[in-house]
Image (cartoon, rainbow, N blue to C red; front, side, top):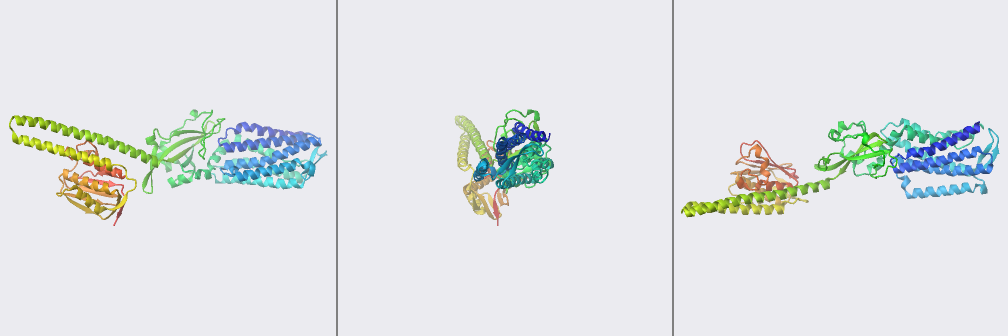
Length: 587
């Protein structure tokens, strides 16, 4: 009866180990899955070898099965270490030197076990009758040395796992208990050495591995996967992308170093709607029924994509966080300048059960800036076309009308009127030349400045004033210091400001340097609040048609620096233009 209990225990352990292989196919992380495969296979073989040895009284058969079990058992140690390293997110199992050392050690120990009939230092087999007839094993010196090495290696694996559980923010009490099941058979090994014959001197570890497999794959499956995700902190911290892992209840499970830099106020355990309400509000809902249970795509913290053969692992249903690329780019202020991030939302599931989401913030600042610059240049070219068409159409219409009237005046001998017509044609023609020169200048200066220079603000304003040549306007400069800008473009901007003052009958134009830019004010005609934005539009008649494209050209030069220009509303006289986004150094 006692023999049947022993044999049945090890056979059951072997069946459980091999049966758990199918369930373990659902583990999403490939290396963790492979490590568990190897652990279950070697433990299952070890258990069956123990059962064969106990079920026979033939020394030769028992010796062969025991030796095979010893080899499988020693291989179990390396499988266990591989699994623990992969599950915790370490790279020990990937290092070539460690792999080579493990292979050499396994080959040497295997040779010692296989050659035991020659040296007899590993074990001696003999038939005993107590508590039932079986082949007993007397352990030799080499066995104890190898046993010490095996237990030391296994202890390292347990330390890695328990340290991962300790660092995890997810409750792991149940999981700690399940993992401990893999270690308790060691107590039976020790008890078998010191107690009576009722407890045989055996290796009971396969029973512990079987209990561990049942617990992790069938009892604490969700927690097992969640801890693996949040336990990959070292891997997450190596990624450039900011990653926030959020539970189904909206609580933040984990963040990496990049996310901590991007969101310094975010901490594990907080709710998304509390610390990042804007992002939480835009997170798209994921319908669990829409998640496939067939072959899907996996998202791993290392950024790898792997096939999900079984479909009941940690499935990633990756979607854009926002509806389109333009709105999918969000802006965060960092070091005084905007940076742009594309958000990706990934559903984390175990089977068809949604357990959380991963938000990945990809820094697309360089690409977004290029896109915006191309958009700006495209709008600028469109503005050029609209301005040229508008100005030429108006000028040609005036010229055509004046010529017709001139012909009538000549027929009627109205010489004074004829001279006035000719004067108007000359003025319009000159304005066309001015517009063409403006557009040509703008085509040359409208490209974005990549490396502006620190220049003296007062000196370059004075140079721009002299270029404008408007002696009837008194240009006043307030504030001393430097500004980071393109010298030629800044002079052109001042020239256009003086021209705008002339077109609005201003007598005084003031340019004041501020901490974030400068302000241009005039004392002439004002602009209605409703027309303020049109001042910067090509083809508009603000402040009037004769002003041409002055305002539009000013905005184009300002944007070439990465600045912004606005009209300060609610002025009873004159115009106030505010330029912001500049780097200045006030004295």
